[in-house]
Image 1 (tube, rainbow, N blue to C red):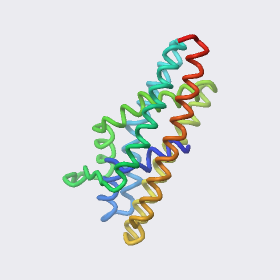
Image 2 (cartoon, rainbow, N blue to C red):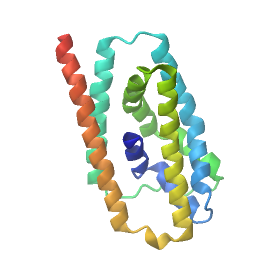
Image 3 (cartoon, one colour):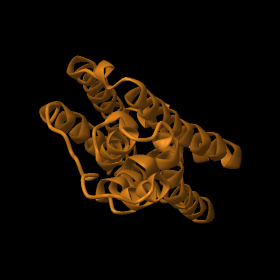
Image 4 (cartoon, helix red, strand yellow):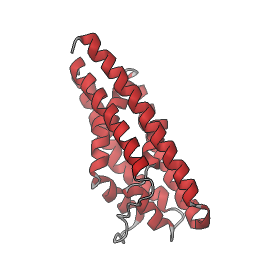
Length: 199
């Protein structure tokens, strides 16, 4: 849940779309999250089915852990360095919020990269508990997305003055700490496994 939260809190295309749409609709965040889920759930299921049907060699699992861990650390550091920047990809988007969530997710290369590395690492861990573990993981991950975007849109719609730079900076620092911390953990665990396998 913390890793999912850290990912969704980072400024990015979906966040920019939410900020843009929330100015005129208090339900924009919920609809954007639903659109996001329309793309995300099939991708999660595909990754899970591939991992379930085929025995993943230990070397591949270690590689995913190492790459995913490094990517997490990189994203945490990049978030710190870009904490004062805003990514506004929503400026020219005039479609409804649901479609905005679908399109922004599908067109986001960072989203695909996240799932092929960090997301796959999380699904590998959830897969140890079978379908039940994966279902809980998938549900919690999307509910974090839904809750965040729905709340952000509602707060912005009701009173934009509360969304201060200081609050945003605090959230950004929290995201960075979570990414770097978990990234270090995943990378360290994979490195220990690699040494144990003699890689």
